[in-house]
Image (cartoon, rainbow, N blue to C red):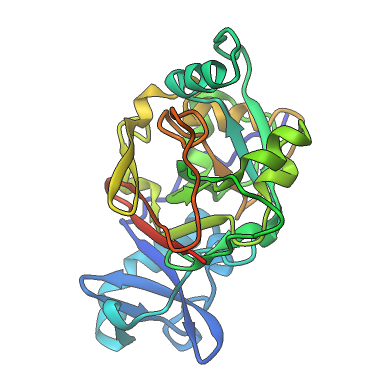
Length: 305
């Protein structure tokens, strides 16, 4: 059994983003209303994945250098920054949990005319890496492919320490940080093909960001409010404490027999309030704006075109 590396290094809170600068993706560190742009000269890696790869010792060293970085780094006003997904091109598909909130499992069963059953084990599927979209990116409406685009606000977990067979009590120590994900779903494709992959993997159907908040700022990921809105109208309003399988259980379960690696992304499921389960059903259409937010992390705002 391979365990995640135990906690040995402390690191201060960092709110990290990826910016597009001169057509290149660059690591940014949020500092008030500015983004700091560290460079190799500052002793920092220039991409998010490279930073995650430095491991706990590297995170501690880099966070300790923040006071110096504030004096030396180039600053970009946040209002002028072109934010990308924190990890614009993940190394692997995003791992996702289905029906991980009781109220969502119940509304889904009602919409299908079925009896509601709470899953006994996590339901896992993936989204293609090409589905990743920016926190303010355009979501393609995909006419001719789908007529049933739906929204799903979710807490995203970024793995920082590799491990296999991770015990639940140690699972959160393998987490690098947290972000916001909108698991946009093409329900007609999802239900037509039975397995979720096609309906979940349309290009641009995974807005993510706006930042990754390192795990020290969120000691309890089961105490976060998450909300979604469409054209300003509230759709979802819940807490991560309502998850059926909490973050520690999810990480531990996924690691049984399968190595989790730095930079892996997990979407932990959505609460009730999705479009297909409403009466009558509601779906995103061209011109709509969908917002997803989680307290302490930030907000996605994406327009469907």
